[in-house]
Length: 273
Image (cartoon, rainbow, N blue to C red; front, side, top):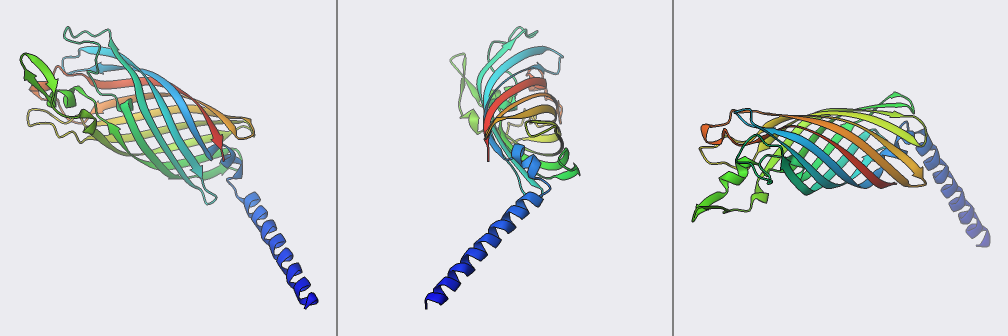
């Protein structure tokens, strides 16, 4: 009996040793291991941006916002890449408007008011341990606080316009494609360029006198990740965004502002896993 127990003990130890060795060899043999030390992370960030609004009469207004951002990213051993990003606006102002009726209020659309977006792609290891190329699809739900939505949810009461509905229920359903090129300098520095093309479908259901604020959107992003200490990661990115209405504003909304372009930056702190 003692020999039998000792034999089972040796068998279990041998099996665990083999399994551990196999696991380590599998992890070490993954072609994405060097990039996973950057892309397997979750973060919290603070961003600023500014942009331009315009209308059918070429009147314009500039705006600026602050926002907080959060997200999680994962690069799997087989090359599947997933990223979730969310944001919430904390400050908004209009300035320098050529429209005499403009005030310091959200007169035009800005998808950063409240964003939830998911990217799904497949990474190609173009240059092992150095260059990663990832085409992806993106889908999201972005708050639509536009002149379009605001005016459609207002009524005149005693000469004063008041909201008659919860405009946070007005949103864009977004979908599109993109590509990401990532360059790993070493174990500390990683740089990337991201280009996406998205269609934002206006789901605010404006009345018959209003054209939906649906638009096409191009976003170019350049960024860097820094693994500064153990699992601590710092991030920095800058981006440029261009929007183009997919339809033509109706006569009732030709004075309303729509987003034209935007520039911004985001600083983040996160943990890798």
